[in-house]
Length: 169
Image (cartoon, rainbow, N blue to C red; front, side, top):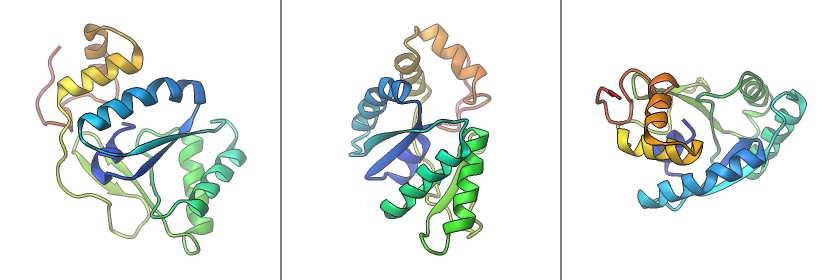
């Protein structure tokens, strides 16, 4: 889920929010994956306390004030972070325009969440089941069988939105 916006919007920079230790472990894998796709996206981690709405709102506000053409992708986000996005959107959408969207994994489409009837990407992008398994193996430091189980039981279920093939472990 963390890579969907990277693959569709092809941004110059992506900011991940969360636990720094966890993000710093995953970022090299994401960077390597993006490089294999010939993307030049810089990934920047920002620490947030996922249980502190005030600090979440402050971090999101800082981002929209300093980053141009910002898109908040709330795909798979945690409740307080999504709530924080809504608060920031309601408070600042006129002064600091930014987009808010989420990805429907089952349909393979982006859903507009900022009520402007526009999305950052229309069409298909490619990530194969094999690439997803490889990413999961590196991120979760697990073998192929465990990655396949994660792929089937996590949010990557049913048919992958990435290549529309039925996945069988």
